[in-house]
Every structure is written in structure tokens, then in C-alpha cells.
Amino acid sequence: MSNINHKDFLKNRADLLVNDNAVRENQCDSCDDPLLFAMQDKHHQFSIGLFTVLNCLKLAEDEGAVPKLPDEWWVDLHNQYRLKFHKLE
Image (cartoon, rainbow, N blue to C red):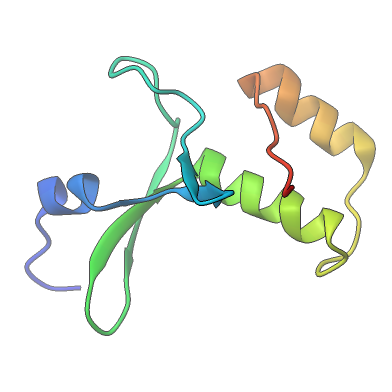
């Protein structure tokens, strides 16, 4: 990706949608994802946080779209990051 503008990536953040509502794990300015990924499709540059990716993975697992991961792995993630996994209604 050439001409990367990091502020643009951060301003254009992809969030998990649950029941048409954007869900971000932490809403305060000083507490946020420990890792952001800079992404680009054919028309947009955006960022997506680790917590959003993990929530999407959990939803995919719950829906049977990906193989089940060990419960201990999810417990370790919860203990390390205090994640709350969001379920589809």
C-alpha cells in the first residue's frame, strides 16, 4: 500500500455489527484494542481491531462456519483481554 495515511486508517474503523449496532469492545479513548490491522479493499483503506476480529471468529465458530477452537483458548483470551463475546440474536 503506497501513500499510507495512518490517521485515515484509524478514522475509518471497521466494527462488528450486532443487530445493526456497531459493537466496539472498549468505548473509551484511552483503552482500546492492543492491535489494529491496516486493511485495504479495491476502494477503501480502513482499520480493524483485534477484538473485532476475535469476535467475528467466535461468531463464525458458533455458526459452524469454522472448526471449533478449544475452550481453553477462548478462556485464555478472556482472561488476558477481558473480552465479552457478542452473540447474534
